[in-house]
Image 1 (cartoon, rainbow, N blue to C red):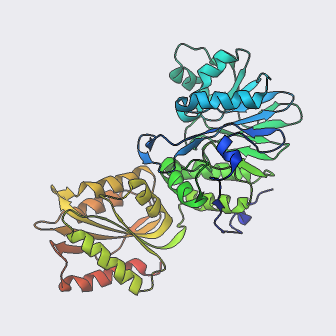
Image 2 (cartoon, rainbow, N blue to C red; image 1 turned 180 degrees about the vertical axis):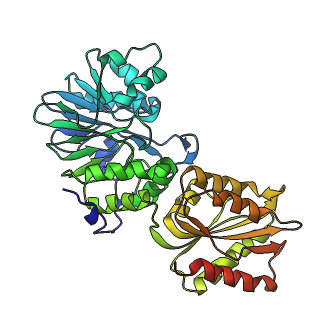
Image 3 (cartoon, rainbow, N blue to C red; image 1 turned 180 degrees about the horizontal axis):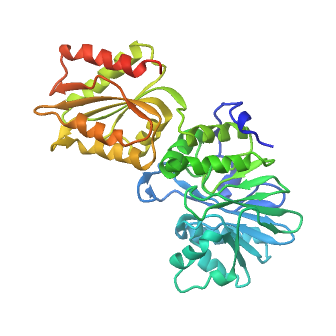
Amino acid sequence: MLSLSNFSENTTEIVYQNRNNKQYKNMIFDITDSVKYIGVDDMDLDLFESQYIIPNGISYNSYLIADEKIAIMDTADARKADEWFANLEEALAGRTPDFLVVHHLEPDHAGCIARLVERYPSIELVAGAKSEKMLGQFFDGIDLASRTRFVGEGDTLSLGSRTLTFLMAPMVHWPEVMVSYDDRDKIVFSADAFGKFGALSADEEWACEARRYYFNICGKYGPPVQALLKKLSALDVAKICPLHGPILEENLGYYIGLYDTWSSYQPETEGVFIAYASIHGGTAAVAERMAEILRAKGTPKVSIADLSRDDMAEAVEDAFRYSKLLLAAASYDGGVFPPMHDFIHHLQIKGWRNRRVGLIENGSWGPTAGRTMRGMLEGMRDVEIVSPMVTILSRMKESNLPAMEELADALLAENE
């Protein structure tokens, strides 16, 4: 069985070399002798959830269990319905599916349900009890509830040589989410948990895009993720099959260990993330100089982002990743330059917490960025704002350096 105490035994990063793997190119492949992957890659979508850039695409994962009875584990986005149905028909090899297990009703996973039911009128849906109200919302005019078996915590479904056990995972990251455990092949079908951005055909290490995915999709819901990890720790798990990204089957402690760190709001990397919002370059110069000061003081890792130009989702990811945060922003319209306001707002809604923060403001007359940033941060949980706050008047000068050095020392000081 998995043990939370052993989740971080091995922190070696794993790179998936999939681009030249024919089984991933075909998008139908065996996970075990009776479980197949039938999902599809989407390389044409520009923004996931209309907000997150996905330079390497996204996968809509779906699985088929062929036992005495056949269960389809989720569908796919309607954008890729034709490809998904082609994969399904090939995997069925003439058989008729008995069940569709709906782990999550979000359209990127449930977009083909109506067409599936039309094609296979005898199929029975299996979904969490909280899905009942949502079915009608997404599928108006189709009576899906009458053909759905609504299940709760610990309910089971026999497929023949295996039994699926259903574990509720509310708010990971919608309220109706559940996961399934296959007791024969020791597979957890984990819904959006353990997912990542990037198509299966992409060559990239797991953690970077899984981290960006987690904190922007599930980051607010750390306690529910912790509850799910506790449930998984009681199971004998050989593979994890998420709804996005690769199937995880080697070094599960690495993946679950990161999830444990992320969902408990603990820093993954000791260091400082500097996020700045600069109008005419003056604040950018201050941020770059602060990076030099921090490195000179032996900071293990310093990362820096221009909030006006860099990917906001990556900035959110790094704010959660690093142990300390330094914000530098220009004043604007009696407040703070909007890219910084937007960034802090993202941190607020994602539940960012348990960090030490330093502030630098810039202004040509009546600087206001500092008090605006402080006001937004003070309402957040377990956020320590260190002193001094550095004020720059238009451009950094030699006279500002002592205060910048003092701020760096305060930010790096050991917690008392």
